[in-house]
Length: 222
Image 1 (cartoon, rainbow, N blue to C red):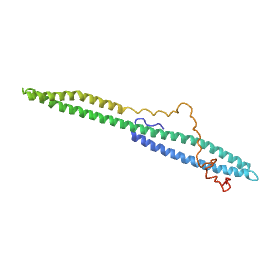
Image 2: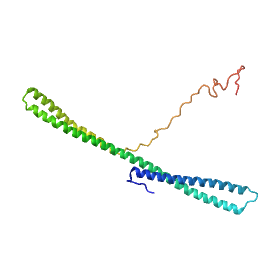
Image 3: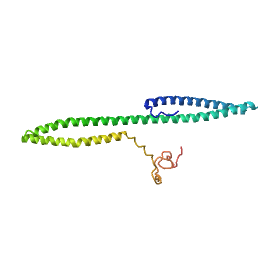
């Protein structure tokens, strides 16, 4: 059975449930065949150990064992293929969930960008109007305040697009699939053996408790 490509997580999980049920049925069938094979082998050995071998029963027993061997081979192949199918579905469900999570994160960032742009427009317009009003007063203090606010407006105008650009880059990164893990590599060069260090209390060491000295100075082996 082919794996759904665009059915979403729900469809994939539904298919996984069906494939797992098929796998369980195949495993039960395989277990039953193994039991029958053991029983047939026991019966075959009993026939061979009898005082007089019944040739007809022996031939029938051989045929039964051959048929069971063939059936076990076929079911074993089916079980292996079904396990691969279930494993592939597990992987695909994980990939699909990860893709959905990446898209949700990118959508969240885009929403924040929209809020930033709306807030920027909502702040700049009244500040600009206030700067114009202060300029029109002709008062030195008002002019200084207008210049101060104009600098703030200029800084906001300069920084807001930068922040939005950074956030858009984050959204692009969020949509990217993670790189596969690098395979573990053996370090180059030969491994050097560790130097042997005699430990106290082991066989061959005079301080070992396994070889205590008796009163005559000879070792007593336990």
